[in-house]
Image (cartoon, rainbow, N blue to C red; front, side):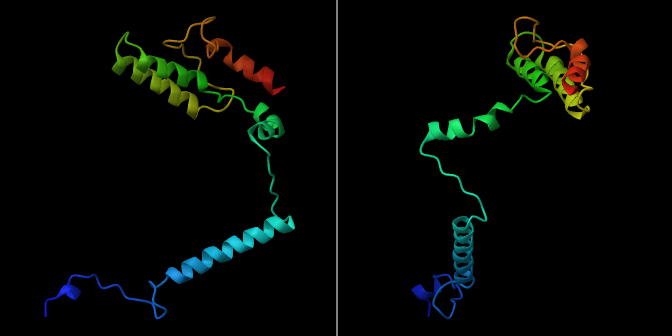
Length: 143
């Protein structure tokens, strides 16, 4: 007949009563958890604990001090300012600024293009790098 059993989806059940494969997935997850727990407890995988955020900041400070901006960060800043500006044409200036960013990203380190910026000004913006001295600055840093 046409009863309530016809409306229920027919999901094949595992002989144990669950969905097929679910038991295997849970067993695999439990096995991985046990394996990683043993690896951490035996010291194979180093695990460092921190008391709080301040302890974390103090112990990882040397790693954070080594971070420096991307070599094309000035081009990204210039492009963002072009798109945020209400002056000029976003289509013309934005397209050109985006093109200069991609040229910078495709260039090899130390050979970034020396094309001028649209919005960044020397002495005003901290992201400004004199495009004419860009190669010179990179050669001094490599020494």
